[in-house]
Image 1 (cartoon, rainbow, N blue to C red):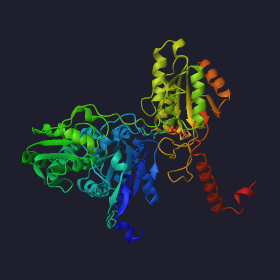
Image 2: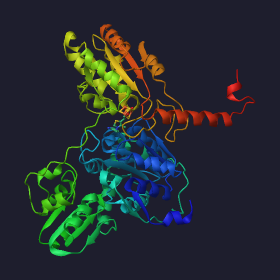
Image 3: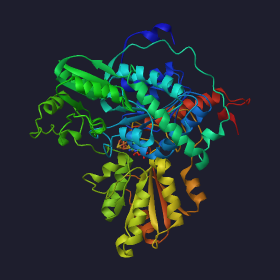
Image 4: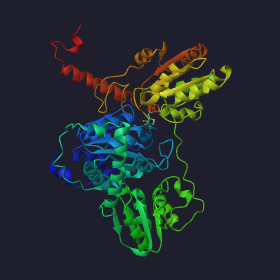
Length: 549
Ligand SMILES: Cc1ncc(C[n+]2csc(CCOP(=O)(O)OP(=O)(O)O)c2C)c(N)n1
Ligand code: SF4
């Protein structure tokens, strides 16, 4: 990369800024699972030459990043907020083990549910797991804080939770990067059994160490440059973090501000001094009253937003209303274009058939969740990724056979790899009396999040060829004999006949409805052509692949 490109002012999104900072920090490996608004971090990291990979799910991604860090390398793990639920198990224990190389866990939260099933506030995870948390407010901070987080993680030997939200991830603001880190440690593994093996005898002292480290960081945070005091009028003092800070600055430019960047553990003395220095102190934050509750727990008298502003994103106007304690009903947003499955989408034929058969569909998360909308109305439940199988099995276990006979699980290919597999294992282990049928919608891509690859496509993050999990082999290998592959063509009665026969046979069935996503099909053909041409160019034998017998 030319030196000027490193330090020139550029207009980039928060996600791009994080990826650039990771590159400049010498991050050796980025591992993640796609999810809005985090997806672009790994994609741009890879485009800029970083080593990045999609993993089957967020838990595996975090574990891979932990391994890289244990081996002394700098690593990031990226995911959307709900992904951290999946990765929570390693998260809580890596807080005890600590790290060698920097480990930054990037959680991209979605207040307002632009593209999610809930609007959980992952700042709670920092407290629950005992992991320090950085919260940038714009692209420059996303860049600066990521670089600071790398140094911080190695200094304190702790993983860092890097919490961003939709507006920070996707809005573009100016960034002045710094030259890349000249001293990136080379990976090296040092044996340290007492720190890395969390049996009770080692975990108990590890927990004590963690609490001591957090107390030391809290004291250090009182003078850390990650937090900023912005002097203003004495009549109003605002404590804010993340994007809420930007909105509050615009809404009340003459107020005094305490802008927090390291929001766990909190700089208690700094906050106490600030609150005491102003006549009226108010916390402006998006999502849960996370800061407000913690500051009140210090015995400080701060105001916080009325409950109605806990829902959805904040903006300048909403912050003005909070400051004015205006709780009158908010105007409804103008109706947008309702989402729907694309014309020609292979999922359509499946949901038309399920609707016409009167099936009870235990659904999952992906483009195909849109089968819930008219004209299909053919999704009955949708909880979280992978839940389609377990939820259907539970229903089948308790309902009488005549009521449960038409229950079907529907799951996409990426979601099946993410967390559907264990549902199938459960189906084999605890089969319902009258059998069950799972339909895997294999469109050869992770369409909903922007057409990323997954272990079933045989292509990696850069769309280059890699190992492919062949669903039918895998499922037969698990011991399910009734595995059917079908092309779900519109108007073809074959799919309906197949589903009907599966529902009636009382056995365990998996139907793989295989048809590439129509929006990705041309690109997939292009990747396959490119990969075949590359393979031919590097073929070590004397014949070209075309002339081989
Ligand atoms: C735990 C978790 N991680 C990530 C996401 C984001 N996400 C929603 S659906 C989906 C996968 C969709 O792919 P697939 O199952 O293949 O269905 P398609 O959209 O291609 O129809 C992802 C990654 C999520 N909702 N939850
Ligand atoms: S993007 Fe692909 S999978 Fe999603 S609705 Fe459109 S055609 Fe279907």
